[in-house]
Length: 148
Image 1 (spheres, rainbow, N blue to C red):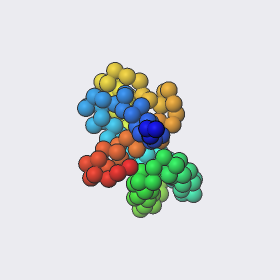
Image 2 (tube, rainbow, N blue to C red):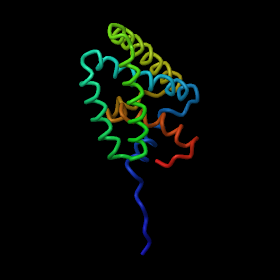
Image 3 (cartoon, rainbow, N blue to C red):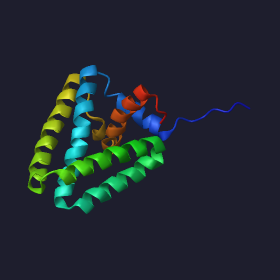
Image 4 (cartoon, rainbow, N blue to C red):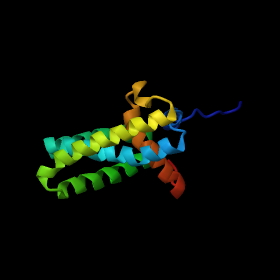
């Protein structure tokens, strides 16, 4: 009896996400804009209350942990660095800066998808809003030869 392994959820999600991110220019835009969007979203939440930002990070880390421990660790490190940077910023600058970055980064994303000729993945499935950062992280992991 032959044993065939099923693809892991994370592999399927990354493959689905990659389908609308094949153009090299779109990929480069995403490499810049996705971390900027994550940072700016955390900044908006931080401006509401730091505990809100932390709660969202912990919730997303729980989801990432269910998909892949190495990705959860990478996202935890990235989130911790972003939260630390937000904590160092003058409080009155966090919200306006975060809103500006959020808007500019989303404009970049939509320009990338116009270049790609495909709509953003999250239009079909909102989970892809959480998979985008893993897509970017997967390139770093492959370059560093980190298994995920």
